[in-house]
Length: 381
Figure 1 (cartoon, rainbow, N blue to C red):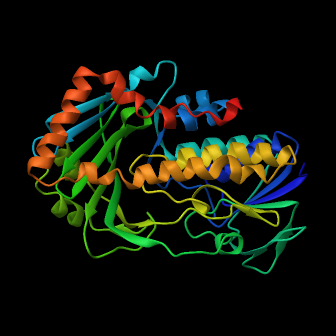
Figure 2: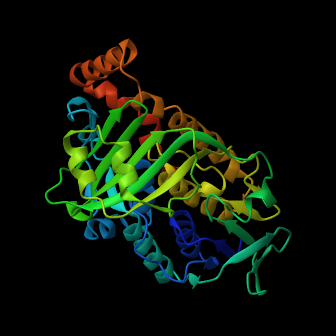
Figure 3: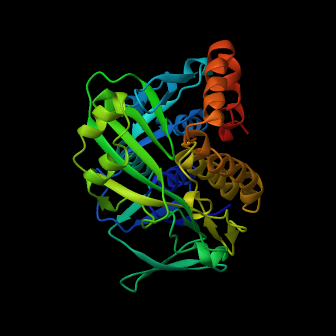
């Protein structure tokens, strides 16, 4: 069993893992380059597999109090006038819940839980490098260092530890970019809407008790944007790219005041997730495209499993338990976008007809296709 850990990154996976370890008696310090946990980011979809971890950490009710929205459905609609094509009935999940939450709210709840568990949270501390070994340590930008029994890199796409633990192929541009924004809302329905158009789609869903709407708009194009969702763009560019979208999307786009733009890149899943007492977690190990809304959920799964393996003195089991699962979800997400981007023609007509018939005639079967994702509970092992 490890007695101490340093974690790079105070995001969802890092804070969840810190809390799980600290509650099992491990001394944990988390280093985060940001000077504060600010109200940045936008919406997340926490499906039952991710919520299982938050529930095991005792945080489900706290999230509800923060204004998490329990989703009732996912509606697939045509872009022109917003006509409904198909509907996934999330109430068929039974006692399982599917939530829409603001990223800042979730990170805040996780940070509070980590502190209550005794985790030391050091903000404004950029980590320059990670050094593996029997006593791994991290080097900070100011020259200081910190040592522990294990170092966990939960620092996202451009992890300082990824090339140390698992050097390999570079990411490649997918030919898609995405905008992210939030706009005010009143009385929004507790559903996610996917508006499907030629080479483009828009996902929208409510946050913070329905007081705002989260928007993610994806477009296929040859020119690429820098990776990372914090790069600002002109809202006029988003409105122009989706000018032919009608229905609810047109109204939401008219409310835009600020948007971020990022290029979507396909990253290979790391071949090695832990070496010489340095572990990769979440996007550091397996960045995923946003087409199944599983990035945060996979990070939560990783956090719980890694904490259990370290406390049990079985660190080698972490990758064995997680890599195939993460790879399967990521492959499914990567293959999902084309379904939303079909051009007018026979294929699009029959695809939408099949979706429509399936949701009306066999709604239970429509939902069961996601059982392998949603009913996976890492806390039940």
